[in-house]
Length: 318
Image 1 (cartoon, rainbow, N blue to C red):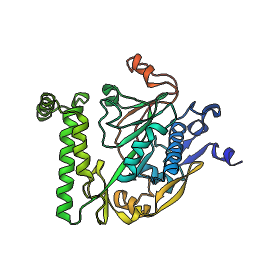
Image 2 (cartoon, rainbow, N blue to C red):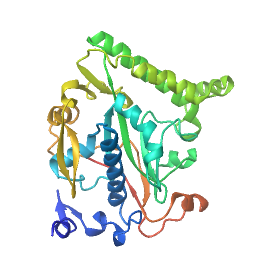
Image 3 (cartoon, rainbow, N blue to C red):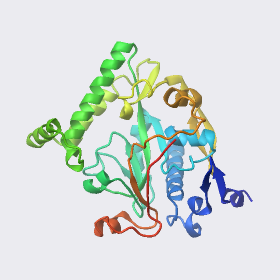
Image 4 (spheres, one colour):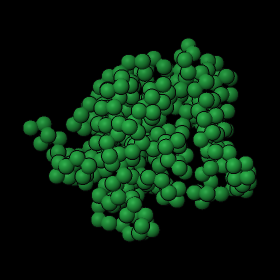
């Protein structure tokens, strides 16, 4: 009975959410006809692995807003965002490659060539979910969920700003060195920095290890705040009380429960203000090509040109 209620068409904030958006096609694992269904399968895998190994993760950003405001996805959303404290995050990316069930795969800089993001993604290799930059880079372009690390921040306004500036500056340099070829908005300085990186031939993994050491240099110390270092340039919005993440609560999310930080209200108000009021906001992913039924390798063979029925392009809002 609960399943029948879940799959009923509904309206959320004036947005129609139909059965096709929610349902797994034919009830067959791995064969999905909706982006949500693909991502919820990935979420279930994260839950299974974290429960097995005693790791904590939390819904975050739009996913956390959706859990609080809609008891599920924001109706126009098309991704799932999770966060982990750095210790759990690093344990997860060590364990997950040997635990994830195919066609799911963990994507990190250390696991896949040309992937340069400061966070991990889980991808379904039998689907398509990618930006234009993803297509140029040539790595796994399946539908994904994001997993971000949280790091401790130094105490004091000056110390935290100096640390944040160092982290952001180093990331900008590394990103320009290694990913610049995949972007169209080239600058003269960017081109020169990219050419310098090519001349030096420093392995990407070695450079990224230096960046990660800088990110986690205050972990394990008695600090009161944590930060999502991926979005550190928006320091005030993405710096949160550590106590908010010390305890976990479970919130309804579609037809399952999802863990959230016990201090979710403070975390969301810090970044979004009145998060119970829907508002337009840009997605970090840009415009995405999404197709839950056609593998990205098939699109790649076609030169990313032909769109099949069921494929759509999407960008998010909150």
